[in-house]
Image (cartoon, one colour):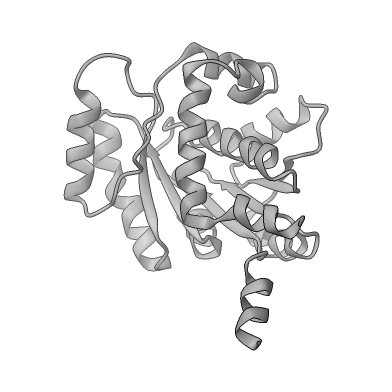
Length: 229
């Protein structure tokens, strides 16, 4: 009996995903926004997006919307724990943390608070060289992590070469790659996610697959569907 009660209780615990990269321009905010919006759509439950970047790009995107889910909050790393505790009390299904580049303190705080870390990187030499610093932080936090190839050129073999290079660092790859598309840029400009701006496009199809994979690990959608029965 207690085993069944424990499972029923724990399956509704809020999950947290941190988007980390010590290099700028890897597409952290794009990844965070689109995953948060998809989580809100799939679960029908509250989802939060915490912006730890002083530039507050995700928060500015949130200000341009007329929707409250996902809830977008800008805060300093020192306040991260406070917000996460409050969201757990509020029944938030998933929190996505968008971090700043070149900020070890904030990135480490986010990694330690996360159930899973995603490390976006473009298939470029400078992104690959910078990934070692991010991997070091993940090692300190002792949290599962995956690299996500982002802004991949539609043609050419750069993505495959980058994937091989990342595996040499010992960081597993997410099975879905996000292609560089103008629709992603336009969607953010309009205060939308790709699923809202171009729901039938190839870009949204990639994010749907990425969220499917993410949910297969965290079980956010399954837990929320069971909660509503």
